[in-house]
Image (tube, rainbow, N blue to C red; front, top):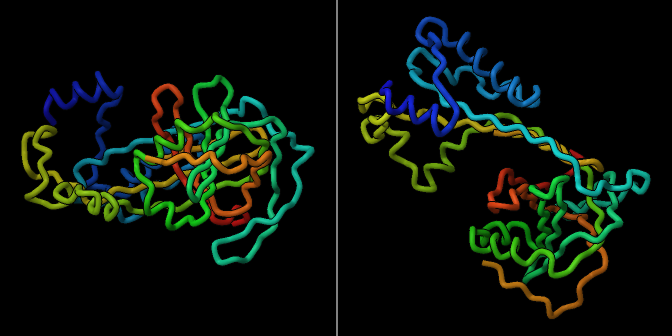
Length: 270
């Protein structure tokens, strides 16, 4: 690999290359990578790369891992946690532990959605929960401008809160199609991909991009690993928001408005 590429990894990303012999033993290389990811995520993600994702033709595997564990600025009172009903997309209900926050939290609402923000200890990060009236329609219309509008509207009002305790732990899935649909098509095609800045050739291309995430939310905080709204305040602001139907959550950096994690909860009992 070219020295300027290696220098960029070291200087700007604090990363480097680890040599593995994929040609002689691709399975051993897969296990080494998975062990590294497990170590970086406190064993929350143990098998990021499934067999046979790495083969004798594999030349380079780029791996990124992030681990997040933070306490709420004001914890939920666990003595108030009680079973409550959560309505699923199909109209059925499940019974789940519902946490209660008695202290008012920043709130905003717009056409077809309500949102609440729960800050983490240190006031550098927060979780924003958006509860749409129509989840599918809301997701279809969600873009950077709408999300920025939701974030900027938070704090105009405040509400107390009840929400389910939940955790998300999924299997590894491929995001190749998602990236291709977003316009990143050439990178997956031999001959069209251009990673010559890495090794000086046009032989490299991406065969797949794999992702796995873990998120757990309880009364005390959140543990996670991974890898334009029109605000309408001309209706009455509720005193309490009951998050009792499918919702989307964002964990964001308050200084930069960078979204670190995003997910949706359809069934907290699953």
